[in-house]
Length: 195
Image (cartoon, rainbow, N blue to C red):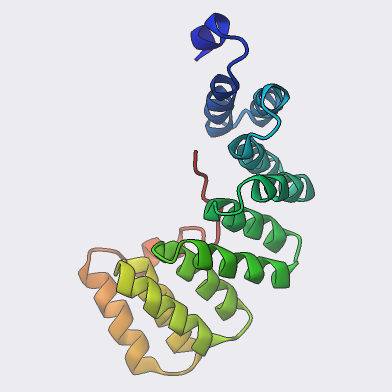
């Protein structure tokens, strides 16, 4: 990517791509520098705003992440991933109402992504809204019956003391080779990065 930037120093996409490499390598300050340059060259580059938001998020600068996600959403309001990423930052700041709104917006934009239903289900379950969470897990499972969705639904059933259904979901998850203990070692709500 450095060679591509040397050959075409006004290529905003090159800076955005190199920024992603720095971001993925955990070099967030360098990533932000490249996203800044991409945005200097192309001020309406929604993806660069979203990617820079991810770098701010990983640095723990959640309000700066939200600010960048808001710019990305303003420029490209139909990119669901920007909403889910902003949701993660809102959750870190304790703004659960805005986080839930973003989960819902992502589902409205792209209802084919089961992880969006799962994210909202996790959010609802963390607020004790287990019946609503189960409805979202049901949708996620209809789209793609992944073990983690089954396990999350099992957790909600267990919280509601519906142990038979909880056990059935855990059994189904285990039959796929996915252990419940492995699920417990994974983050339950995280950032998805795209681009």
